[in-house]
Length: 563
Image 1 (tube, one colour):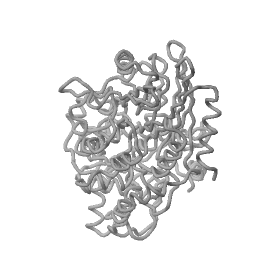
Image 2 (cartoon, helix red, strand yellow):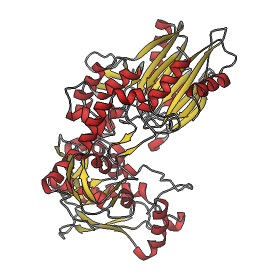
Image 3 (cartoon, helix red, strand yellow):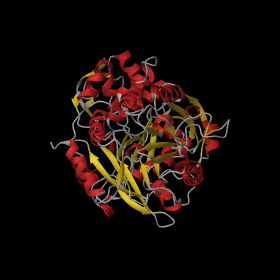
Image 4 (tube, helix red, strand yellow):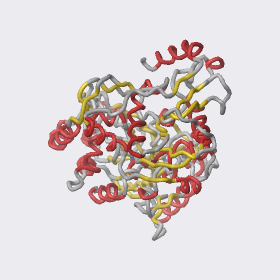
């Protein structure tokens, strides 16, 4: 492996050989609890983590004093390491606060999954950190001022760098209100325009950086450029708001390094560093003799960087604490389970969440989607760590009332995202020319509690045929059924209830039967401990038809996903 100082010096030389001064900004985004170079769910060492980030930062700081380190949110959720300090050990200083303080992060923007942990967690962690949390468009409903800090100024060698934070405003469409109580969320373009003006007039910065927890594609989910409170408005800000020299983005887990033009024709670098600390974004801001900033950016893979031995030694005790927690045995698994099976019909992977939802709520029907596509749970002992592969997020449970007709519309909407007509596309799954799913698999809800078939060769909206209840009782389109789903779906994630069924937000709230305050993974763990393993059998309540005609397409697509 090449010396990191040499690599970094080469980067600077190629980017800014003619400038008088350079400030280097290193940023991470969507780390999702990837603190250590170790997978607590599989017990395997990793070549991506905040330990790797720390080593890269150390190397850059050895080369230059003009370094700014930023994080773009979604760091508080995703692994047993995060969960343990969020909800198990709530008295110690939060591990991620310790880690970010140790690395010397200068500022971060809060992410939607950070908000998902709830006030008790993120308010506590925010106090434990030595750097400001940014989100100019998150408003305190009592004061009318930003709930978090709207921006910060970082000075390096006499240059004042303004960093303005923005958070995707779609929080109310995904999360229960108690998690963001006291907050309102402004449109990103409107907020950016307001705060650029304030920062320019008040702070007189030498450069302005946007640190946005919001994705690249503003058309995602059927949105338009002028859709109010667009989830992924980062590029819209770059193209519609003058003043930014660079915008560091995230949320979508993508990799982007592009330049967009501002309304005045100024080049704005837009950089997206992906997820799980696999890469860092390196933004170099050069200042010539005229004092004007010029930006150049690179994505730096951390696989070849190596981990920080100092970091690993410093946090060795905390790592072992989490290893012990993740390795705690909770029961036995009698068969190998693969998450990819969920794409092609009934799967035991999905039966786990369906079974827990129905038994815990007493609902008639459950809706659930796979939250992982590459998970394998081997036959043998089950541990807490493995449960993070079975159910990735800390979603709560909700039960609502839907009519039989609305249940069918819900499923039609879900499968329309999931499947295509194989006679037209050559595939059962809705995939692109590269063999990748066009839609997000975590929106592919199947149902339990009913027996039904799905015929992808029929026209959209008429593919699902519900035969009966799982008990054998008749399924009535006019009856009202109690339906269990997770809090992400209940609050609007994926659009199943609003766009699919056609219910308004107010009507969804009126249909609520019960909201549970324990996350679904914790419910599963309790059930496994109680029964010594999974308490339900393999279900066979739905399938794709006509089976014989679909078999060649089924086998073809299964090969694409390693089955």
